[in-house]
Structures are given as C-alpha cells and as structure tokens.
Length: 364
Image (cartoon, rainbow, N blue to C red; front, side):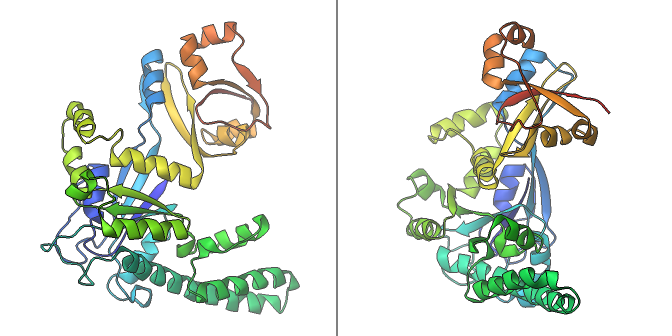
C-alpha cells in the first residue's frame, strides 16, 4: 500500500510524515520546504503477527508494510506548472490513496499561503488543480480515441464513456464520484486520474483542540460536514503531538497514549482507515522459518492470494489448508487444531478472509 501525504504548504505534512515514519524530513515555516518527495516505509502494526511469533519463535518475523510519500505542497495554478505543481502531480499519480492533510489549527507564527484558516477552501483549491490536470489528460485521450475510431469502431463505447466523464469533470466534480459499471471501471482506472484516488482528510489540530475532543474547533466541524456531503472520511490528528509521541522510548508510548485517552497512535488509526478505504485485508503464514502477514484485496480467492508469495504457488495451486487466527491461538498449536478437525482444506474457489492462517499446497 502506497499512500501520498498531500496538502497546501505549511499545513503540517512533513511534521506528520516525520511522526508516522520516524523520519527527519525537513519542515519549516515557509512554502515549498519539501521539494523532492520524502519516502518512508512503515511496518503495519499487527498483534496477530506478534502472537504467532511468540507461538512459533520463528527465525524471521515480517509485517505487512505501508509506503508513505510526503509530496511537495500544492498552490493554485499547479495544473499549469505554478509552484512545484508538475512535480506534485507526477508524484501523486503513483500512489494508491491520498492522505490530505488539512490545517485546522491557528498559529500566528506559521504562515498560511492564503492568509487565513479555512479547511474547505483549502480542500477545494487542491481538488480544482487535480480536476484541471485530469481534464487535460482526458482531452488528450479523447483526441487519440477519435483518431483510432476512424479505423476501428470498437472504440465507440470507450469514447462515449470518456466524453461523459469529461462533462462530469468540467462540472467541477472529482472522478471518484463518477458512476460507472464494472466494465467501464477498467477503462477509467487505466487513465490513472488524480481525482479518482481514494482520499482521507487528516484534520491537523492544535494540541489544545485535539485534547478537548475536536468539536470545539470550528474548522474541524466544517471539514466534517464537507466530508459527509462528499462521502469521505476524516481523521482528527495533531501532527505536533504525534511527533512528540514518536520520539518517546517504546515502553513510554503506550502510557502517554493512555494519558491522552487514546487506544491507538495516529499511525495505527491511519493504517486501519486506509485498509478499510482500499478494501484490504491480511492473511498470515506461520512456521519456524518465518511468520509473515500478506496484504490482499478483500474478495481475493485462494490461488491469487498464494501468488502474492510466489507466482509458482498460483500456477501450481492444489489446495489451501486454512484455520482462523482465533481458532489456532485457542488450540495452542497447529497439531492440536488438526486433531480437533479445525484446519480446513479449501479449493480454488475459496475467498480468503482477514486473519486466515494458511499453508498453500502446490505442484509445478
């Protein structure tokens, strides 16, 4: 999973990136402090992996990972190359989802590029630039399809979809709100439109507002209303506080979170929301050589899931021996689970479930 952290300059992107990746990307009180994207790869916290590691005492423990990309700040006119617009847009095109950091805190010592705090205005600034970039890309594709259509009438359906999408974008609406059939979805996804990316709004609050329960912040309330109207998710966060937590020794983090009344860190909450947003789950493999979590899309069948490990596993798939994590831990060992008949033999049509502990049988 690759997540792009985006937003206007000076909203706290790099501070949040530093906190969740334990990196030291530059963050300063001026626009375009981030120029080239900073990249951090973070293991996905998973208590199931920890428990299986205790059970098997493997030589190696491997968590699923998330790649975070801290992308240069965006300003009006980015789609025409203003600021670092072209660089920003090319970087965002490669991510699976967008974490849009929106400034909800007030601080006279940190300048805002538009001179005031208005989360909805800031969101619309970036949305407009993404849509304008998509329109330009779409126009080029439409011109190409029209030329292809002269010699091949099979492009008729694609042209109709693209022209319908063009009207949608030109009305100021993001591509992700464009309604399509499953067949049409394949055509649209191939375009890699920026405004089609799934998005989570990270509402960056001051320490006082975050501790007070968020609802006292006027900007956060407006952001929630906007997100609700646009079928999007909002995650309240204090980037400054998250950075302080990230600098604590591991044994002190849980105590500090508990004092704040939080069950999870911002990183844990963000990963959970992004997994849900992208429809991702994890299955597990366990043994003395290695305990490992594997990320797949919800609805994936066993052979395709096996292919995540190695293409030979998918090509020569015979069966999957499956038990749920909870059942395995209750039994205490795979041998005990087999004796109780809890290890199931599943075929090619089996749809993988979150937390499945699996041994794939294959032959090539």
